[in-house]
Length: 458
Ligand code: CAA
Image (cartoon, rainbow, N blue to C red; front, top):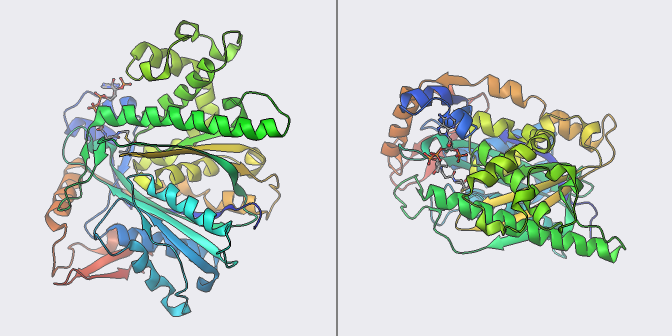
């Protein structure tokens, strides 16, 4: 099989407009700090009525392919992970095939994968599995994940966002998926789901969703730990695995505070599984919790407080940088985790990252979750694949700053328009294209047979 399969290149797309969370706090009449401090959110990107999931994915794939100048016939698999469903049968992937038309390349496996925010990770696993199988034909795979995260007026609305990430998957990658190391947890839960096909909005049980996320994190981490320790044991190493063995840690990010608490939980998990004789300075302040069961701590505020304090230094070193896009753009559902990866790369040099392990936790409500990891290549020399990957995302902060700030009134008006126009036929979305970044694909027309036509802003 090919060696070192993983991420070779990556592209991020987010809308060109946002609403500030401080403005939203005032507009929604909630206490100052609830969204910005309590949830850890700064700005929220949102789409105009001219954008849908197809246009987001068209844009991010086109941007990636143009930037890396890869011939369209060099792609043998294209996977899409999304939960933004506008058609119960026709895959977003089929729309993306338009981009390949001129190349004549139609021999491209892969379709859409859906389970809430987990679809992007399932797509990544599918692509890697293909490449490590007898069906691989020597070409690259593209993994695309994207979503429009919108909620009705209410307490979930500030946890929205929108965006897409495209990743080129191939051998000899600078970010290698570590083989044999996936800890997965799946169960049946109604924490967040979308049974109403006439609406873009999910049904959410917010508090339950947080417990489900944390339970899945605990289980996946334990499964991953077991697998990596088994690998180590076979190589003659009997050390326990802890967060010390992960230099950077990224998470699916519904809101940033959730991630800070999640890293803290991993620390608790290490502490509780470390045995009673541990005299590690790292766990100072946690002694009172020795003997607790993880599942007894989900709503315990004392545990929360002590953990956040004990893990602050670790959070600043391992995770904080990965939250840049999330705090400034919001939840991107399937692409959230990969947006965190891009943010992490944008805030570190290739030298800093070289040789490290990046742990990743992917969560999709309903629920499906995995803990897995990337090994970063050791070669950070100028022109190396790692250095190229890192420099390709270095303009992320500048791009985010170039967006247009909209008022909560304008944001609400656009949300109302999206409700009104969702699934409308024989219609062209109103508005000009000046609220889109140059080069963005947008929805031009939906005909009376629900067929969608797209155009690209010059
Ligand atoms: N200053 C500082 N902090 C404040 C504050 C203020 N003035 N006012 C409130 N806060 C804090 C609260 O104390 C709370 O923090 P702690 O939990 O640490 O105590 C935080 O702000 C949020 O306040 P509430 O818990 O009162 O917020 P809420 O109940 O109104 O809504 C929510 C929060 C439940 C997450 C809601 O936004 C929601 O339902 N969001 C969508 C669901 C979601 O994101 N779930 C996450 C897990 S599921 C998942 O990951 C899948 C996915 O992508 C959706």
